[in-house]
Length: 163
Image 1 (tube, helix red, strand yellow):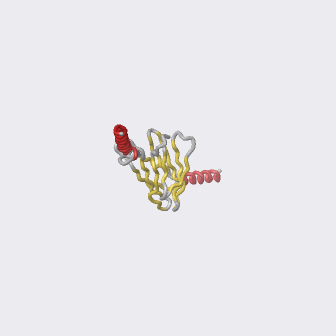
Image 2 (cartoon, helix red, strand yellow):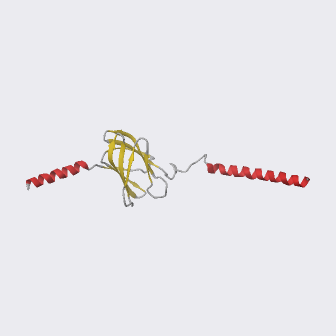
Image 3 (tube, one colour):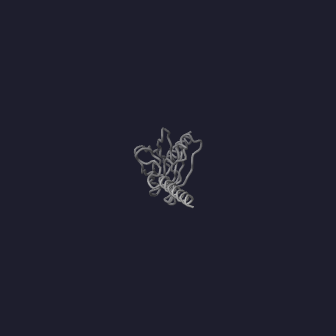
């Protein structure tokens, strides 16, 4: 019985040592949130009333392996990110990225991540191109083409009248 209790105690200690902490993050009001997270820890945050989690599975010099749990999704999403790429997430399934997760720094078994809100409404950022986009020049190009067509048509009508 004593051996069984010792074994149970060791198993309990082992499972406690393998579990990470949960870091609650508030993304509202911030465009970019920087967080340092050790391997095996979980980042928990709300997005539009739903709770999502990013678990840091493995941290190495080559990058970070994560598991993303999106509320309402039946299966988790597994990904690897490093300095050269980022993870873009779409929580509301509108085909627009809502959050970008980037690696800023890797220090041993800790990773410094940047969580950047994308497609934010209001005065921050909308994801829509503002300024020199092709659609804003369309009106100018169309007006110019119509004027050129009217001038050519007027010249042709004038020539037909003289001949």
